Length: 505
Ligand code: UN1
Image (cartoon, rainbow, N blue to C red; front, side):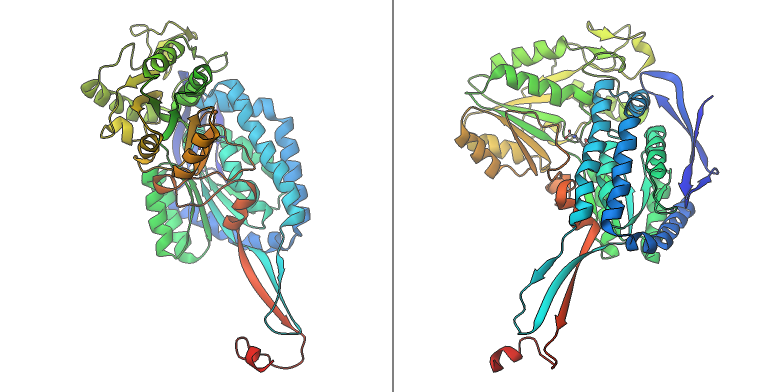
């Protein structure tokens, strides 16, 4: 029987809505779930409901909320394989990667369990005698969390776990093409002992979500928006929040560069480029966009990289493949449009486009390529800084290559697209590594490692077109889901006036 996925508000199912079908992108005929997409009014109602439930949750002591997070982590661990299988089936992520993604939720929970017992405020010296100053972290209220489907469970957990731990309630709007995975995660969270109404999930399309969010912001029932997705939608969310004097937590696209210095270990650099360029079929926000390789090793690197890409296994995500299919038909359509442009402007050696019987891939591991959204890994050598491929995020398995002669030039090229999420440099020279770190505009820098693969307790986020400078993960995300409250306590027994009394002492 096909899974039926519905929104859950205040612990109750909301079965009405516009029907949507989530399919297995490796076998398009296979329906993973039938989903009821809610309208804007339902989204706004969920926010009202969440606001009503938040007060009691905020009164639960943070260490006790931490215990609920601990239960969530253990439940995710117990259900890890089933959840990873579902993610792999629904979005075509290779199983090993999907299992890693589920592991990332557990890591996130493990980190925030401890934060429940810390969530420190400060004692601050006063400029007056017999007076104490304190700071406290207070919950923001209701967090509306809107997430993409390329990481349908781990990246949402980067918002959900700290938001809940900090005493907020949540309305989560996952990507509809990953609805079954999201619904499974919501069930696991709910089974861990969260009070009803504290964690709500609403499935809706972009338009209805936006309209519902606008209503909720106007009514004052959403106090923080967390959004992971395209820079284009992020800008709209930012504008909407700005009108309500709110600053959202935005995690947007990337055009992540990898610089390969003349002293680099080329075997390592090739492996890194292969994983970051074509792992997850190039559909991570941290995926590799352009390799910026020193001119003296350019042809050697390109020969190695091309050989590695063309012998990589593509196919059924349940098997040992580097790349499964693209996430969903709508991403495939957008990527096809990009490939048409590439065809008109570049000469690419090797096969390009969708893998079919008529356009085969020598290393295809699967039953029938015609059945899924499988694409050839593509390397485009000789991209120029004015090229669309150099400047735009592609969200597909395509990597550009360009050359440089000095490190300063490489840094300039790395920053040129105006994104600033992840970046990487391959070198044996610490001076080059640190100069690159200081010069690159990215929020994350890898040395001798790929652009992908951030860990759950480091600040994750970007600058420029990649975000508004907000950071997820680790202790830094606490500033997104709490607000600082200052308190002063005067025990002098007289009215002490700040600024004025100092002169009298
Ligand atoms: C994303 O693609 O939205 O660093 C996040 C990485 C992953 C997260 C990617 N841990 O590649």
